[in-house]
Image 1 (tube, rainbow, N blue to C red):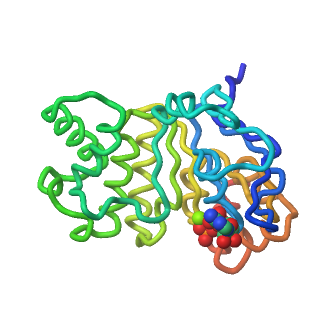
Image 2 (cartoon, rainbow, N blue to C red; image 1 turned 120 degrees about the horizontal axis):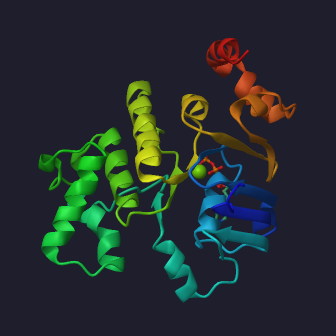
Length: 260
Ligand SMILES: Nc1ncnc2c1ncn2[C@@H]1O[C@H](COP(=O)(O)OP(=O)(O)OP(=O)(O)O)[C@@H](O)[C@H]1O
Ligand SMILES: [Mg+2]
């Protein structure tokens, strides 16, 4: 029997002023899966993420995460759940005034009562996990490449041994090889740590190769959801354009021949 979804969103409405961005979004993310969330620029993907984690107030609808109702929860109840997830934000991934290791330690200082020595040890382990060297620990974000910044941000998202991670465009700005390496890293994390991953991405390669299921956001709603094969069958105009358009055609032809 399938277990309860790790994220359960029902009829979520979110807007700013007289503009409605999310107009009845419903989506489930299951235990242990990598769920990819795609949609046009400005369609509301980051708004959805920010609403789930409590940075934006919804107008109506419900959000349950890890079995707890977040909509209407108190600060204290939220904090209990926040402790169990990690986030890689689309922008401003790192604190520029903190070194690499201090960035990773940031959530640990907030939630855990560890000695300075333990803080260093655990943070170093997390950095090693995402493929960074000890010599990078004392660097500052301005001294890192884009790919290294993403890795440090992932290490920080993993700092508290979360059950769930939210990744907002983890591979944007990376060259295809680095993006592929990052995808492989996410897959390894999911497999070895048993993580559930909610990943917002525009990266077709990620959607095809690393996501177990995909949801498509358009016109304020989830217009298609399922495996990539199921998504490709959706008649929705945006889905057709995005997955079958010119830029996607090479990937599609490869995928369709293996899928058929
Ligand atoms: N705090 C805010 N106040 C007012 N409008 C906002 C706010 N945050 C987001 N928006 C608007 O909501 C819409 C959706 O934004 P969002 O950042 O979720 O897009 P997105 O799907 O993540 O796009 P991208 O793929 O470019 O990251 C945009 O029109 C944006 O201007
Ligand atoms: Mg966004």
